[in-house]
Amino acid sequence: MTDAASQFYILCTLCAVGAAAGTAIAATSFIDDCLGGRPVLRFFAEFFTVCGAGTLVWITVIYLNGGVFRAFFVLPVCVFAVIFLICMRKLLNPLETKFKQAFELRKKCGKRGFIAKYLLK
Image (tube, rainbow, N blue to C red; front, side, top):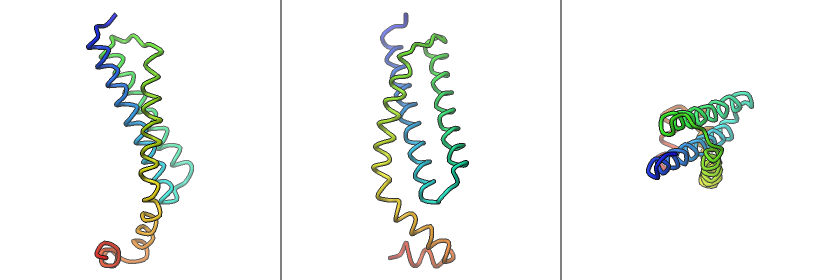
């Protein structure tokens, strides 16, 4: 059995991994919605995000807990991933139309026109 400090470090690390995974999935969703990406690219982006989070969980388990995996370790990762996913989507949702307009304007105009028309307003 690990001591209380180690358990606290493990819990904090797992919560941070969940927060990073939720934020990364929300950012992937936002970029995909704004740029009108393809479903296959979105799948691979989310797949690599989840695989990266899983790798970080296993690294945490191996280094901080001596390789002993407990079923509880899944709970803080999932809870914080969902919380940060919802919060980041709520934060990024109002910016979606502005980002789409800026991207369309950037495609229409050159670099000089984009800066003059959009950023210097």
